[in-house]
Image 1 (cartoon, rainbow, N blue to C red):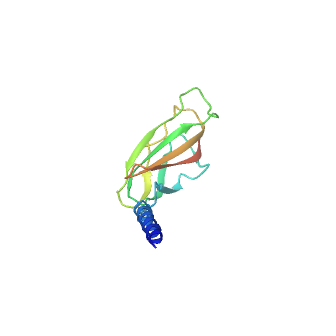
Image 2 (cartoon, helix red, strand yellow):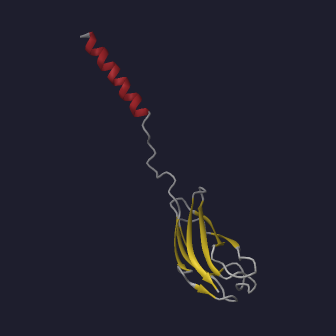
Length: 142
């Protein structure tokens, strides 16, 4: 009889330890913010002197902080001038959903003294927990 009580006591204590050590946090770990970019469109052609506009919807489980847009050069650029590598950070509204519509990016217009060709429009989205996601859209500047 005492052996049964001893086994039950050990099983009871192991069950308590198992329950107390269980992970009770059901919240998602490191869910990344998302963006749905409407503009610029993939493969969109821009002429020097025109304007790049941003239209996008943003979402985060914890709240949005900012997005940074920049252009990265591709290997297929042509010309003697330097590549155009502007960058712009836009503060978001710190809620879980935000929309930017027809936001002018970088400068009033694309400079004329830059290399032409394929560029990557990159959008980096950061939430209030500093989780981030990156989106890359190929565009062409002539």
